[in-house]
Length: 349
Ligand code: PEP
Ligand code: MN
Image 1 (cartoon, rainbow, N blue to C red):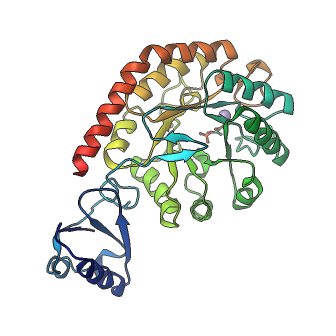
Image 2: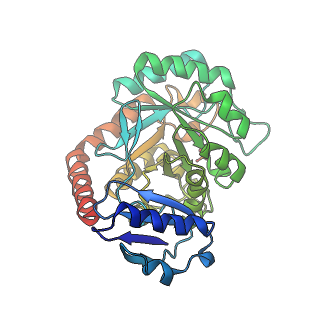
Image 3: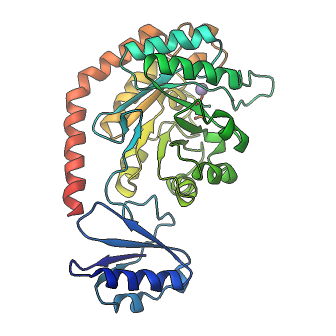
C-alpha cells in the first residue's frame, strides 16, 4: 500500500500516519526525491485498514499495490535507481560496459584482458573465480587467488570488478576484492544467499534464472532490497525455451516490461543469452535499443583455449567489432535514454 500525502501535510500529520502503520506491525518505507511525499507500507496487507488511513489528516489518498514485489516496484520508487560504482553510474544516462572472461584462468590472462577492456573504454571487469558448472568434472573456478589478480588489474586500469558468489561464505571471501557481487542464474532463488547479500553494502548483479518469470525475478530482487541493500542491478541472460539454434533465448520483451514496473537498472548479457559469438553484437544492440542500462559480455584473447564458455567468448577483434557497431547507434541510444529520463521526471511531479 502507498499513502500519498497532501502538499499541506505537516510533520505531525506524517508522524501520526507512520505511528499508525508501525503500531499495526507493518514497516514504513519513505521515498525521497519526488514532488509528492509518499509513504510505502510493507507487511501483511490484512493488518492495515485503508479506510482508516484515508481518514488521517494530511492524507490525499491510499493506493493498493497489487504486485507481490514492493521495494522493487516503480510505484514505491518512481525515479530510476542509479548505482555508483567507482564513479560509473549504473542506470544513468551512459550505458554501462562490462566485459571480461567467463572464468579467471591465470594472472597473465586477466591482466591481458583488463588492459584490453580499459583501452576499449570499458567500465567494469567481469570474471568468475567460483564457477557454477553443469558438470562436476568441468573447471570449477580458480578460487580466491583469481579475485586478488582481478583486484590488482582493476586497480591498475581503473576498472570496477564483478564476480560471482555461489554461497554465503563467498561474500566475505570476495568482499575486499570486488565492487559488485554477481548472483548467477542458477542461484537466483538461493534465498539465503540473497538475504545475506541484502545485508552487505555492495551492489548485487542479479541474473535472471533460466526459467524465472518476471515476477519471480523481481521477487528475488525484493529479497535483497528487503534486507536493506538498495543496490540491485538486474541482468537478462536468456531463458530456456524449445529452440535449438541458440544456447538460450534472449527475452527482449522483458527489458521494456521491467522498465515499466521497476526502477532498478537492467543489463543484458548477450553471451549467455545466445551462446554464440556472431550473435552477441546484434543482441547487445537490440537490448540497448529496448532500454537496457548496459551490457556484460564475455571476451578472451584466445577463446579456443578458454576454460569455460569459449564458444560464446569474443576474441579481441570481435570485441572491437561489437564496440564499433555500438558506436553507430550511440547517439540514437543516448537520445532515447534522455527522453525516457525526462518522461520519468515529468511523471514524478
Ligand atoms: C557467468 O556469468 O559466467 C555465468 C555462469 O552466468 P549465468 O549465471 O547467467 O549462467
Ligand atoms: Mn560464462
